[in-house]
Amino acid sequence: YWIKHNREHEKEFRDWAQKAASLSTEIAQQLQEAAASMAAASNDLTKARQALTKSKEKD
Image 1: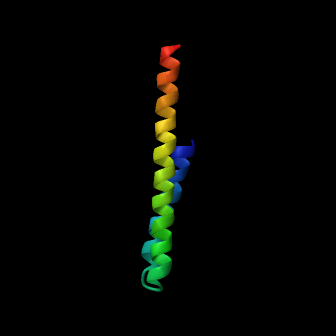
Image 2: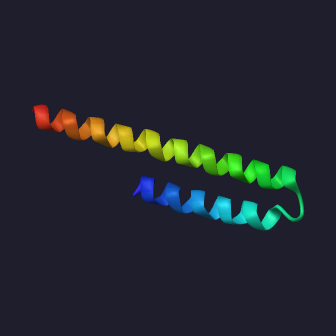
């Protein structure tokens, strides 16, 4: 759930960054950075899920 939810937010942030670009490059950049942070969080969650799966397989 969290991974999907984060990816939805990441997409929204990128969409808003594109819209904001004509008004302020600073705001657009901040939104892009937020999207990148969300992508990194999703990546970390994916790794945690994979580690959990491997751990369960060993038991």
